[in-house]
Length: 233
Image (cartoon, rainbow, N blue to C red; front, side, top):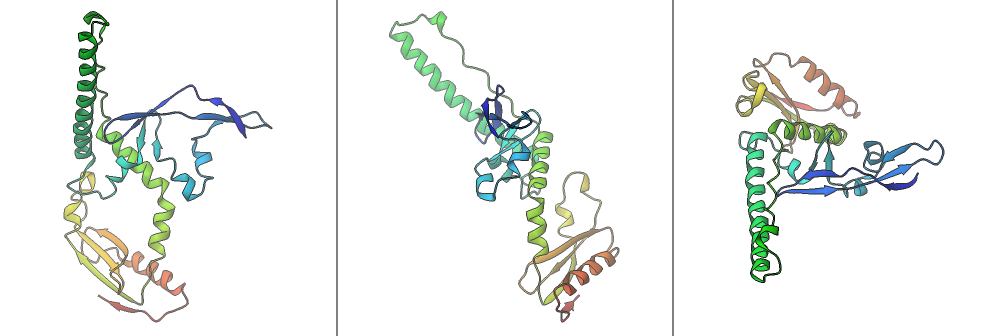
């Protein structure tokens, strides 16, 4: 594919302290003459991990979000919900807008005192851009999860151990937020001798519905060719 010139539309990207703009170019196939944007998902999926990280933006239908904002939601809990993150972004954006507006008005005052222009020719500072809703931030977070779901699955399924321990607790379920709050009462975790968690299952009662989990663990461990595992409950 060859370059077909810059794309006419500019994307506005949400950052920690404000917005910035991202532009791209169109790529055209020499054979079928079809055009695609260089930031399309079909092109990004073909890049290796190093070059893929050079584009730290998650694109949605209308807006775009910087990856630094998304990373703040990866450790979800009671203290960092999407609504609270939006409140922090509004505060950071307001401070940055006030700083830029003060700088602009200070320059206008110095120019007016020099009598180079009249006061009527000085425009008001632009209005502060609005931060997207918490629902949009959650949708961006879901897109981030789907983009790295293969890596997460590989990291989880590559964790093994010779001594497996199964334990149930209620502390994890008390930290759930949103629509899932109150639906589960017990969290059953499976760990190894190194303190790594192999699997976590939420249930409505202690010990109910753990059969498929045990069967999956048995198949997973026997696939290693080593059947000598000790279980502690």
